[in-house]
Amino acid sequence: MDKKEKEELISMLKQLVSPTSNDTQPNSWNRVEELRDELSTDTDKYPWRESVEDLWQAVSYAQYDDECGVSRSDKIDGTPLDYLGYCLERPRFPPIEVLSAINEAFHIYMAAGGKLELEDVFFGPRIRGVGNYSARCHKKNNYKHFDFYVRVGGDLRLMEDEESFRSHQKKSLEDKAEEYLAYGMNPYVAKRIGVQANNESGIDPESYLRGYRRWKRATKE
Image (cartoon, rainbow, N blue to C red; front, side, top):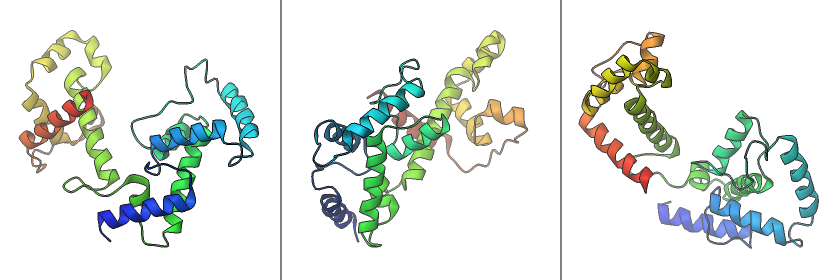
C-alpha cells in the first residue's frame, strides 16, 4: 500500500470512527482543538460532557494549574501522544480532549484490520532520507542539544566561569561540530562521565552543519 492509499484509508476510517471530524490528522493538535470545541457544545454526542467538565475543573484545581501558569490549551512540540508522556513525567493529568484524540487514533488503527501500522496512524508516513517519527525526533533533538552546546558550552554553570566560557566562544562552529560529533553527545557532559572521543564517527561535520543550519532556519519560521 503506497502513501496515497494509506492516506485515503485513514481518511475513510476516520469518518467511520468519528463522523463529525473534519479533515484533520489523527493524533494531531488540530484534532485536539476540534474535540475541545465539540466537548464544549455537543451534548448529543457527548452526554457525559458536563460531568467530565466538572471532573476536569476539580483535577485542574488539585494539580495547581492556575498557580503553575498551566492552560488547558497548552501543547508541546510533538503530538498529543508525546504530551501524554510529558504529563505522566510531571506528573499531571492531561485534558480529556488529548486523551480522546489518542484513543480515536488507536481506534482508527484497529479498524484498519492490519492494513496500517501504528506509525502510519499516529505519526504519518516515513519521510525519504529522514525516516520514521522516532528518527525525525532524534535528529531534531540532536540539533537542539548541539545548539545548546554551541551557545552556552553544554552547561549553564560554564557561563559562571568567564575564562572557560570565553575559550568556548572563541571556537569556530566547525570546531564545535567536530568535537560534538566525536563524542556523539554534549562534550561537556561526555567528559564528566568519562566518555572517550571517537574521531572516526563517520559523520561529516560540514554535512551535519548544513542540516543544523536548516533546522535553525526552520525553528525561526
